[in-house]
Length: 221
Image (cartoon, rainbow, N blue to C red; front, side):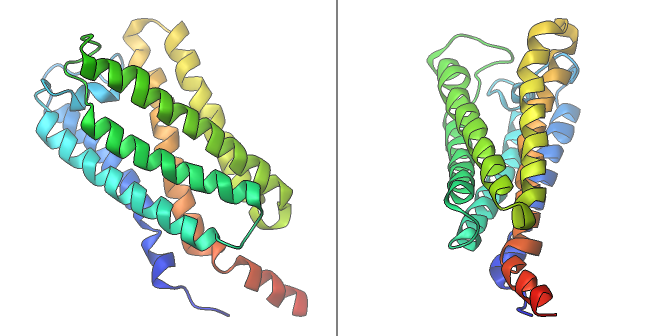
C-alpha cells in the first residue's frame, strides 16, 4: 500500500483555511463594536473603514492563502484520475479560490453595506459574480463527475451536492428574510464554500492519491 506523500499531507491546509475563515468572523466581530452577525454581512468585517479591518483582513488573507494552496494540491493529485468532468470541476474550484483571494484583496468594501464607490462596485458586482459563477459551475461538475464514478467519488459528489444546496439557500434566504436576519442567511453561502474547500482538502489527504490502489488491493483479495 502506497504511503501518503507530502502533497497529501499539505492538502490538510484546506482544513486550516476553514479555521482561519471562522477566526476572521469571530475575532473580527469582537473588534467591531456594535457588529450584529445576524443582520450584517461577513464582508462588513473587512471593509476598509471597519474598526475590525486590520485583524479581520489579516486573518482572511491567511484563509485565502491556505485555501489556494489546498485546492492547487488537490488539482495535482487528481491528474490522471477519475474522469474529465470531475477533474475540470476541481480545476475550476481552484480557479475560484484564486479569483476570490485576488479579487477581494484588491477590492474590499469601502464601508459596511454598500457605499457605491468603484471599489464597492468591483467587490459586489464583479468579483462576487465571478466567484459565484465559478463556484456553481465547478461544484456542479464535481457532482456530475463524481456520480459518473460512483464507487470511487460518490461521497465527494454527495458533499458537493449538499454544498450547492446551501449555496442557493443563502441568496434565496437573503431575499425573503427580514433585514434583521440578512447575515444569518448570507452565511449559508459563504460558509458552505469554505467548508467544502476543507472537505476537498481532506479528500485529497485521505482518498484521491490512494483510492485506485486501494480498490485494486481489495479486488485482488
